[in-house]
Image 1 (spheres, rainbow, N blue to C red):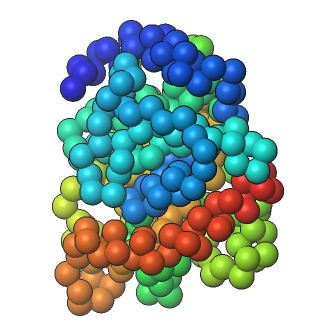
Image 2 (image 1 turned 60 degrees about the vertical axis):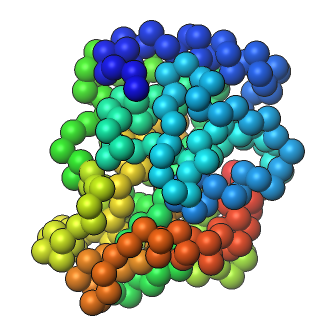
Image 3 (image 1 turned 135 degrees about the vertical axis):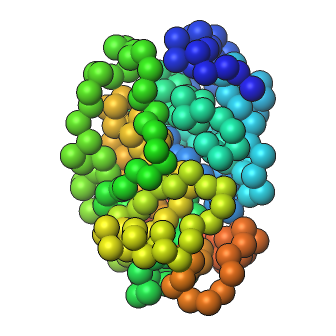
Length: 278
């Protein structure tokens, strides 16, 4: 694992960009997708160039079930896309600098729009496992911020505005795509916790009182950094289970994978249609 100061001072960035460009040639991605737990299969549907994270300077490997750990470059509906087939997480012991480093690399490669997906627990009883939720805003309960440290003025300003982290324009596009395909969807606020333990019923009740509709252990750091970099963000949560206390069922990661697996066809169709409309 790379030490924190290597990321903060950006020692790996230029060699990573150079290496990736050598692999992809004149392919210039303008849209990025981060594929969350159980959703990575989407990237297998296209002719593509694949680069394992382990080969890219500054990238880490993902150790979580449902995350392959590679960059995938593909043309979809005439758009040039870079996909993270699996992400790595703060709870794996990586710094938030490391977790968000790929987003900064995407910015340097020319990405202007980022679709961030995740598996999340439904906090509201009327939000059902198996539904997709478009994120309208977030609560950061990770206790830290990925922008702490020396600022890189080539990426963004020291104190970036976060009044519209999730693009209203992209949410509108996603809603149009879902309605065209007759896919049931929700819109709501996502709360990020560190994990890896699931939340207690009391914590979930607190998040509900504060206005959250879904809870997970990712997405918020990447969304903050993307905004900082001037990249428009669309967040999509696959609601894979009820959060603690919503019903009496104990939580486990296999349920997350299984539910994501059941809805991935709808998810793939929706993602393809969103890319068609962007």
